[in-house]
Image 1 (cartoon, rainbow, N blue to C red):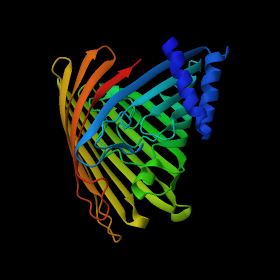
Image 2: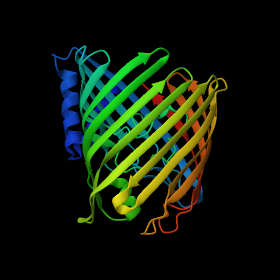
Image 3: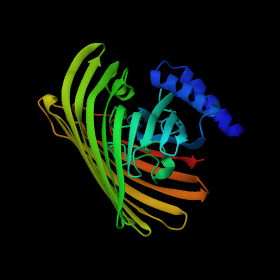
Image 4: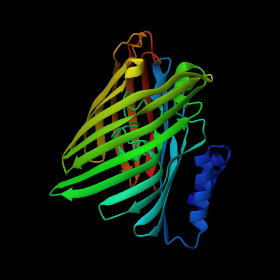
Length: 369
């Protein structure tokens, strides 16, 4: 309990340094949940990552796009280190409040509120969520920061490149078991505004405000013991201000994602393909990855290839980069895993390079509690 109390106080201190409305609300909500006599049950789960790494060739390696986590020639703990707490309060069996606060070493925001929503079970198969959630575009979107949930140090960076990772709105979830299959359909609608966006600020070198409006999406999943299939679609509008000047106004955007994963005893085969389009700006981007992991006792050695390819448009935009990764996960202790990973990035962008070619090594621990 002393560890939990200290961790909570640390997160609260980080949050209170910021003026973002959701961060302040999260402090109030967590405090109320821990002290309210009307709440029937409050559960706490936590997770963390402590990693260090450096570039061995090249100048910089952008490991975490959303948080602008950047390795350079010196050893650093910031890009991949994370601490998160999730509070779930059950007022009744069918009504709960979920809050998740995450401190990322790479983020200048201090603490981020990933989840802050009410969940109501209309029936045993249908539930409604209202509030703030992760934007469920990718397979690993919901637990991107929970490194213990996958064998990499971080999900392949070429795929997880978007500057917006949350939405504020409403979602409807339908879950049902059909024979050997667990199935679900998730419909959602919401908006998100990011002032002085970290990723865009890093790439443009100036202050960039990003606003995504009217996000409407659907996610469908089917999974059994050996096969997991996920489909994702989202459409919405984009506003962007650079140094206070509007450069994109209500531009339509569309995202389509497909992931197919196999769990064949010791062998895991993971794959994901995504397409992003913004027709008003002649933007068309494909991202994809293929990964193999093989469990040998407490060890999972793995190899991955991922890429982002942008079709060159009238403005000459040619963002194009890929990463080859090799690593190993070692579950040496309950709820803890040691990981070691080597990444080789090839950046073929001429008009729009990211950080150039690079080779990097990183290692450390993931844990849950």
